[in-house]
Length: 293
Image (cartoon, rainbow, N blue to C red):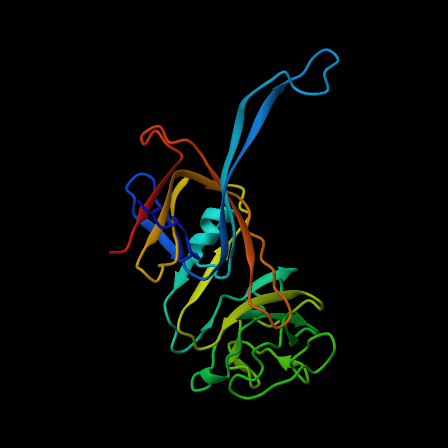
């Protein structure tokens, strides 16, 4: 009889991570550069005497894992690869101006300083993403700085006033219980209830989000961070005849996810997943080949 057609695998379709206890997915990665299933083995050779060659050899350990390049980073990837925590925020039709918080000194946010920073009603379209720094430059005056100009074309176009990233042309006056607008940036500062008495060079910060369709806050590096085990499943690209190849790891761990931002290029992140023995399945990997009909 003739030989059967070669058993081949073509391309990569997705990588799914799931909860080991209930098999519910954490999510799916579909923008992939490549995935490699490492099943490299070692020999344990017996040497002795004057022989330059081994007398015998037995099978050693097998390195089991998955390496690959992912080109998207959803929240669950930060959680599983970096031990991070992620909070997803709903869309904000009016943007968001966070809580103004003292950074250096204590006089900027106080009853004798600023009471709050809030969006300016009717000017929300001028809100620009950024971290804003409010610096006291006198007993009743402040300058405002912004960490990045990436969104300065949002709403009213703006530019920096100085190379030190100041965005106010002249100091803003803080008065008791009164509002002062940060011109063209969509938010205002409100003075405290007491007699204003700022200490020069004290600073505070506030995070601002433009009108958006949603946002995420991802924290990495907490002292309480853990890297729990998970399951994962790799699905090959479907061949022209409908055939697919599925790989399942029942007990996996990962640590590390480099984030490389390159000039005019998409993100590529090389990840490393360790495959471990699973006593329930009595396996490390299971492969399923489905031949198209």
